[in-house]
Image (cartoon, rainbow, N blue to C red; front, side):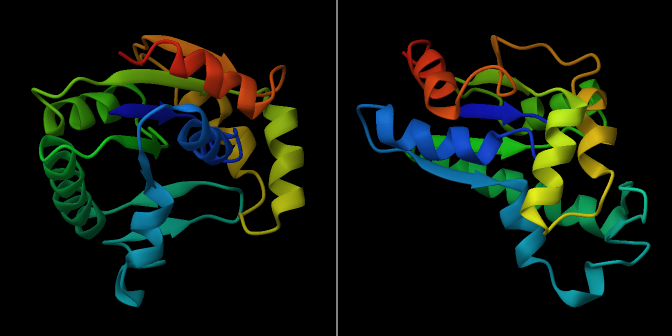
Length: 173
């Protein structure tokens, strides 16, 4: 597995697409956005699910956490069954989020990749995307990396996604 962690609009999804093109064997990509898109309406914008504040804050409740645990168990099961997975996530809790993920992926070979991007670049991408709450990218740009330990880091503010993917692919055994 390859786990890409970075803030909103940092370039994780673009790197994941490029990795699927440059890696010699078939890989699939999954991410936290897939989980959020799959949530029932009752867990969106609710206290027990996931809510997005007007300034870009993201709050997750117990209902979301329960589904997230099941989701990650499923992702891990796919990897244990032989699927090669590029997983893109946003470690809202920094090191605590990585530890939750590490626990779910115990026993798997994982390449931990930090995807960095300057807050002002991520904020510009956020505006261009038009599908995110304003302020989210700037809030998350550095916070998601606090205390997280990586095997490798890339910066999409200074390096194109395809080149980041090539650097990551060189570290895949």
